[in-house]
Length: 203
Image (cartoon, rainbow, N blue to C red):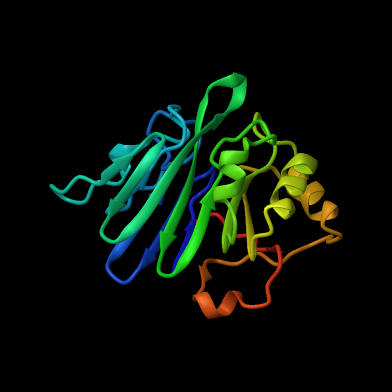
């Protein structure tokens, strides 16, 4: 599996000939947008920073778009969306994704770190957690506390400023983490990892 970061909360996740897009950036956003083809597009909130579904079509083939709670199976990828609270108490969807033998959790624009038991129970055995820090989402301290409480193998921060990232790392007792151009990972690579923070460079 290869994970690329395109700024804000936009990620491209690919394995073989399957590509997922998480919160693609719309052309109407203040953030720089990136266009790439995706088989499946996940959108957590209806906002230009996160709902650029038009950026993930490939030729005349549209991406399969998921933009709310529910259970989905597309191309042998299992996805479950949970309703949660975003900025200004607007709707945010948390996604659990079973892909290539790994369990990914994408928190989206989560703004309330207190999660219902239903969601917490589903979040057992997370391999890779994508967590927002700063802005109108979780503050760095709350984001770190929630992230480690979920006990993922790897934590990937997103939607952060330099200051917010520094504070997030400080909570984990780290002053600096080398940024990766991309994160290439297999299930076996996650053995014995406990809440390791992986920072990705924006492409």
